[in-house]
Amino acid sequence: MTSEGAAQLRTWIDACPPGGLVFFGGAGVSTESGIPDFRSADGLYAQKSAYPYPPEVMVSRSFFDAHPALFYDFYCERMLALDAKPNQAHRKLAALEQAGICRAVVTQNIDGLHQAAGSRQVIELHGSVHRNHCMACNAPFTVDQLLEARAADDGIPRCSCGGIIKPDVVLYEESLDQTTLEAAVDAIAAASLLIVAGTSLAVYPAAGLLRYFQGDHVAIINRDATPADQSADLCLRENIGEVLI
Image (cartoon, rainbow, N blue to C red; front, side):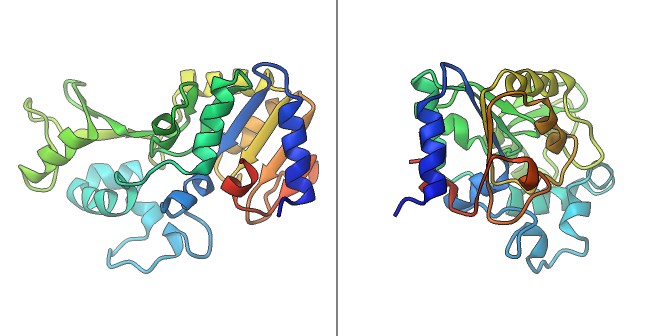
């Protein structure tokens, strides 16, 4: 049964001018595709681990530089979900873009599922597992090439030049790409409807992007409360895919 809040959101979407919708999403958007989020009770950070370091330490730049083999053990086991498929939320957003309603998807996710569903205007704040580069010569690598290089050596994927290959994902202690950040600001500032979904709004600077919104309505879809709930026009504690149908 459609909730009153979900029905209200769909009314706002239907009334959106061309390019008036921007979607800002986090890890919760992909949980319905079987990818765990980070901070929820059953998320990545709460899972028992055989690794000797906490997950948030192992995905830091200093850890990558100091322990690349152990980083890749964790990264390949816990951060790659190459068999995951787009869910209803991904597909609906792609359809809204095709219909001329959705201006952009701003995502904190690195899984590439928005593009797999057909979205083209995707602003990836934290990068993508599907892009990788040699830190010595900057040669590009697909994720399959990275895995192949890792299997051929000591657990550390290396380029033919000898340099270590690094995923194009933003690790802790790294800054967001300025051009990407500016594109997200521009998209949010131009929106009349902003849907924020599947994010705790606890990670900055991404969480601070909401202050650039100047439009009509902000809707938040998240299973837990967020710091922005009090200033939102609508808060839904429902599955994102069930709301965006």
